[in-house]
Length: 142
Image (cartoon, rainbow, N blue to C red; front, side, top):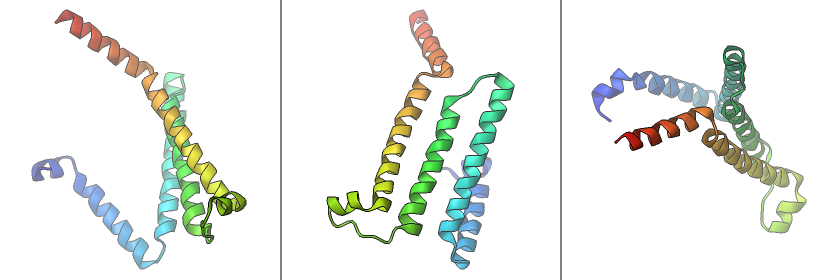
């Protein structure tokens, strides 16, 4: 990345803010709590964005809702793996008989499912379809 683009796009603000938050989280020994609460904040932002978009355009954009659910599921996965899980996964049998590990397995499947839904939501969105149509018309004109 070129230094001028770095300052022009104001990436330094994000870098400084992330560094400060990281150092505060490390000094307070609350790194996972910071990550979890930031994910809560992102979920809240996505839901507000979906509501505002619905009010403004009178339609629901599925990709925004799916993004919120992906982030929510990732937050649950992080909480289960890092904060709660103290069990070992030695065999497949121990994975299936432990309710917590089974929960982690289910959350992983939900994340994969939501990523597929997100992909399909983007591919079938009006914006994507219109852009594809314009590209085809431009190719025909050439």
